[in-house]
Image: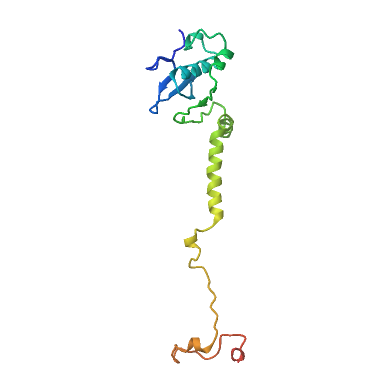
Length: 182
């Protein structure tokens, strides 16, 4: 059975569709991956860019919009602005760890880490972010919490005039004054 070919859309070309802006967008699929080629001012130019992607992927000539083109070099020369293939990522695949017979959990996790380094990186960044936030300390509104001690200096007797004599205790709390030592 021949590989499935992208159907020609309203543009009349494979992989080319009109965007709401009036320009022409080019998409290309190969080996289960989806690529965005770019946007072009005409459907014809967009179709030429699609053909360059077909040549690069070494797909059959039947997938070309312009099968009369003889080589990849000729196809690339016909797209002066070139193409910039960017992979379109779809929904993230959920990965799971399958433990093989005779394999320990630790061995399975190590294998998973080798096969999927992006998950390990994402997990490390998540924990690094949490640690960085903990090291920053409390937020500004929490800085003067109940454990904060604010020193108050006793400057003169005038500060204490408002207190009644009944509340006044004998002696002095200031070790720099002689009364304290009596």
